[in-house]
Image (cartoon, rainbow, N blue to C red):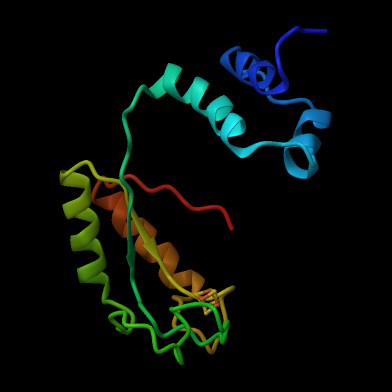
Length: 150
Ligand code: SF4
């Protein structure tokens, strides 16, 4: 057993690329005695080792904004929301690709987001066939594509 406190022990193991044990993970999630600031510092230790104080900025650029057909009351993207956001329908392919090329030239990660919980005929989200075509168009232009997990 290590003499380190639990936060330092987790950080020290993370520096060796070792994940927290199942018991530590449960403690982090449910422990009554978990303190947020020491836990954040434990996460910061390997982050500082690998990335220093560098940050990477990601831009989320919705291909459609504020018109989601779902009615999640908390969400500003809900079509009935009165949030003061710019609402617009699905952008055209040319505009989406131009934005992706612009982001790629600037070497800025760009996330294109479509709204809705799943492909749905009521949704403005592009059907899978269109999505595949769009991904093909990005690949044709040599633009990197990374799919977000769902
Ligand atoms: S499905 Fe997602 S984007 Fe649409 S209203 Fe609900 S939370 Fe917002």
